[in-house]
Length: 376
Image 1 (tube, helix red, strand yellow):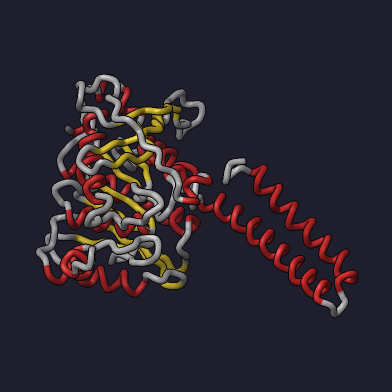
Image 2: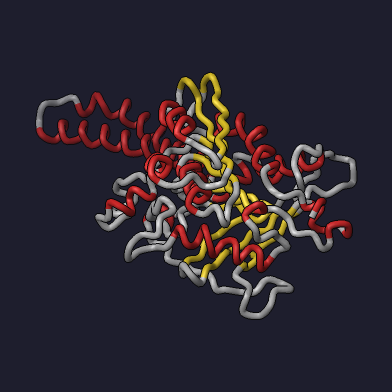
């Protein structure tokens, strides 16, 4: 059974309930003082706890989509994808493989208008040597005659770690939100590329080119733009590209814009942090190089390097968010030509419920920083 299947969750939950019932029934029989009754009591208690934790773990994983499969959980997924030219792309230039295409529901049911299309793809990067799954949202205008020669702006959406790109479709509902904002003229027609920053699973690279390891930064800052702009009609200048992310994705969004203003002109960080984390999921990201570590510390960059000409929006909550003080310090440290805006809720948490309250303002803000394809 699949790791995220409802059948598995119900089965394990039923086992946990059955084990608890069995414990209540067996307990009087295990009340003696000998080694056998004591061992029995320990055994049933341990079994109860294991099954209960397994049931809770499966439910939480399904809700938050930490791991998409057993191989993802165990770190045994070594599958790769070939570089296949997209339809209409020049031979040897394509790096996007389209796996599936589905319509996005219209923001105005009954209007007869499309909400656009969602392409499930694999993006491969020759410079980094990495491949990653993603979703590409194409707005309805992409298929209209009026926009036949237009090049569209792009928003790259990033999950947290370990994350699942599908969360951006099902939990933040970004394609449907974009369709509604575009239909309501609150957002320019914009392509979105939705993916997780974990491009070398199961390792959390924090979007770093790890010395002797995965070149995650190269993939996200160079390969991704080249591949998407080859396969789809997108702009290639910085004013055509923005990036949005939550948690680890928020840190990556800010860092990618600040380190690569020639690629991204704007970024949104939802509950992001401001320096690369080091823990058991990351390993040594910087090879003991303090200078390299500093370059990935956003506060260090603001204090010691010229400010990049980018616009950023950072979010937090006065109560319930661990990054509130750090976010205030980041905003205070920004200096021209960089521009920083903030969206601070009275209360909230590090979760999808909070981000769903922020996205309706954050998404159009980001789109407004980018080129309008109707004026191209």
